[in-house]
Length: 284
Ligand code: SF4
Image (cartoon, rainbow, N blue to C red; front, side, top):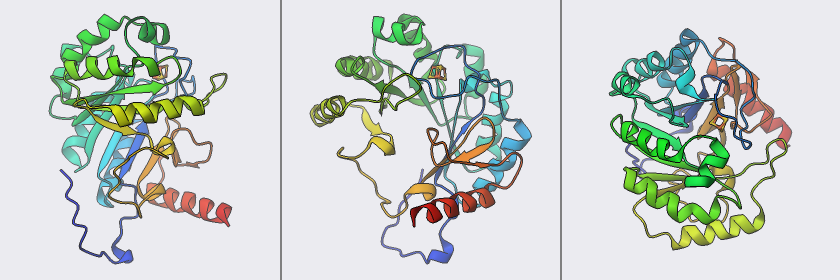
């Protein structure tokens, strides 16, 4: 639980120098081949000891939460160990994003108590989902029964012309399966896949305005313009809000960005300063 005390003015010298939330792509490996995927198709993955060092540093300097992704993070050979370390050796909240198809009872048992939130990809329902993910939609719904036994969870949907008409169904099916959140991710242009059109974004805004269901709706920051968002920390954007570390150990402002600083086993704080300096220089 994070408590916001907004009447207290904290001197700039005491502001945290690290982002509130950091996502880490533990591996680029994935056994699916979604066309909209932005993860490089390589076998890069991060070592446990290096990730643990970054987590300790982020925790020490005030980061609130870490989200593991990929690729498919459950394919990382030390995925459980990393979640357990983050949950029990730091004060960070721990979440991960997954396609969900590898979560069995044994993995669930090992993760229970070491994960606070799970994000499961659900691009459409039935045949639409199956045409994108090439996995059974009924199988996904069965997996969600196991997922909900680990922690609270939400569904992620990549919004395109193709998936937009199914948002009502995605929201209904997710809520029925026990989800508490729906994360809307308008398609970002990737290789040969075009980004969500202006028309799709307009329709999505209309859908959000009309949604009366039980799920909390969220949207990624880069697509949030024009949506009714609630941001309690408007003056803490950019690298003070969020950063991403990819599976090659490059620190970036977001997973889609081409700009980054190589961390390898180096210091995160130093790399954040370098990245902030780069953006400041290129802004002027
Ligand atoms: S499941 Fe995720 S990581 Fe794997 S190919 Fe699809 S979008 Fe990429």
